[in-house]
Image (cartoon, rainbow, N blue to C red; front, top):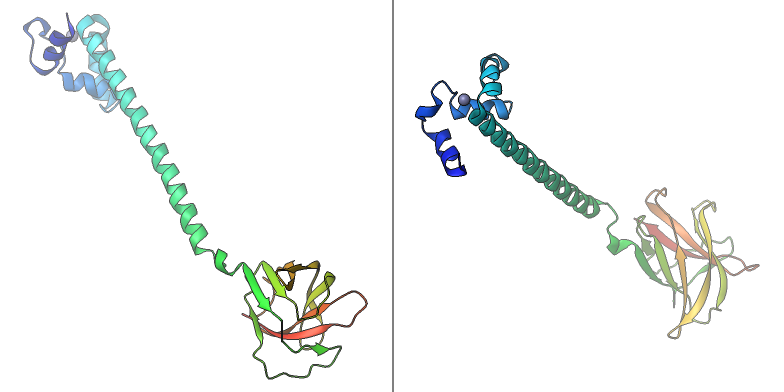
Length: 208
Ligand SMILES: [Zn+2]
């Protein structure tokens, strides 16, 4: 029996296949969609009737192919979900990359020396707690070299401290420091800056 004939035999009753189950039943058995109680009576026939068994095998391969296609689609959907989820996660992170690097221009700013906390009339510097890198443009006349950088609270306690090396960049002495201010409460502080064995210069700074 060629393919066309077999195909037709599924859709139309074939006189040679009197007593054979309907193709929908074979399909149901092959795809495991038919309840066992309805499928079981045909098992004996399937084992004895060659055309039915061939149809059954064809349906079973089709069903397997369909399952594979569904699996491929599910996998693709999962990948898409992860991609969209990841994108949303990156977007919704509180920091955003725009605030990661903060430039603070200290040129022309008056610094309080030592322990005195004299107020200046200048607006305070501002830095987000999400900042990860500060680019400090040091006051005119500052030296290149090693500096300590600290966040100092109004009581004089250091909440964060790190060290970095200032370099002359395009006529400005720039100190690039990595910071982690995630644990700092928003409020007014001082940005402390000093070269080794020199007293702190303090700049009022607002942590946002
Ligand atoms: Zn049959």
